[in-house]
Image 1: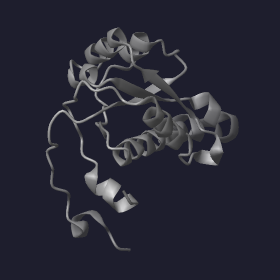
Image 2: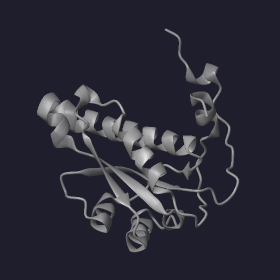
Image 3: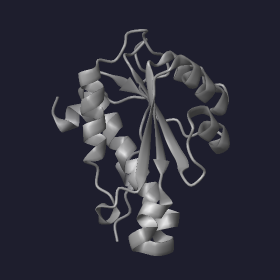
Image 4: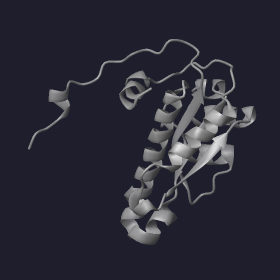
Length: 171
């Protein structure tokens, strides 16, 4: 797929088939996430790869019982690492850049998964401490987003987007 096809094909999926994600596809997704731009190239984020069913079920509970997380064969948990960004950018790195870095990396992973014929959904509704406990994330990291990845279990629901004239403000 070219880039614009990838963007048009990406839709949030909350139903996953039981088919495993091939290791070479997973590796490619992780490599693309690693290529994401970051403030000062500090890569102020960490990625937790969650495959074990017990851990995925713990993530379901941490994410307010969003069952589809356990359906997906794997979930990537993107965490801000404020200390990495603070080393160069002080408090702005802590408050903003590390969060941006984590979200950009997650977006790259999401688009890479789509390009490889996989489906994802961005999960931001969760209890941070419960996510930390579910997968062993240390307290100095901030869970920012979870990205369940797998093969679609159904046809995605296409949602409308805002009109550009409502979204773009010319100055």
